[in-house]
Length: 272
Image (cartoon, one colour):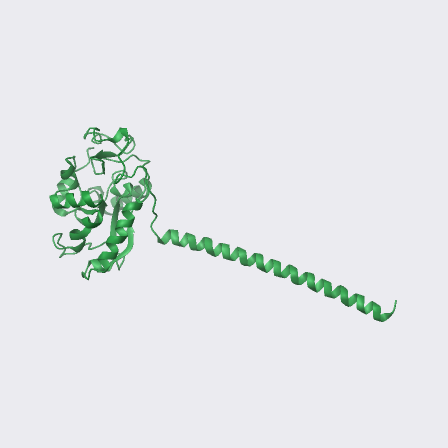
């Protein structure tokens, strides 16, 4: 074999090797890009999940669904008086409205998540507040404290007791199983500083506050006022909204009564 032929064969072999290496490198790079894009998508989904409040339709939906036979209007109003979250088998309903207070606990395992209908109406309320021109309501942000599990409430309440003592904590924080937040129908509004809406505001007036005046138009009531403490069991909270649906919320607001008084159910302090 001539020297020229040997060089041609050697050059062809080297060329083939280069082609193979390029193909392998390209395939590896494409795979890495796919992995990175997949990771970015997963991270984005996780970020969105963390930044956007969960919206889970509960079962049952107390705002639209008639309760089961074990929790109908015929259920004695005293049902929850001697129950605890550990012994209650169902929430307490009156006129198809779920009632949670210091007399009426939720079952420990009641975990519906945030009510989708309520969240939709909450977003509408917040948008209206932001465009209201009101010096306080216009600063409400689309972030809130909504659904809390039994375990989350237990940890929160325990921290409050540790810092303020049980007697003080009981005036502004619910024991686990006694919080409206566990229903997925209660929401705490926040302002642009991340604080609870009008917390510690010395000039707050329920009769002139934008949220208090307009919440019912979106299906909410301001659940706690200072003058209602003997009935509700809690000090005033301008930020705490409870979803009832537009018709019921309007009727409750127009009555000037607490939810307990409107429905004719017991309230006040813990039964035990």
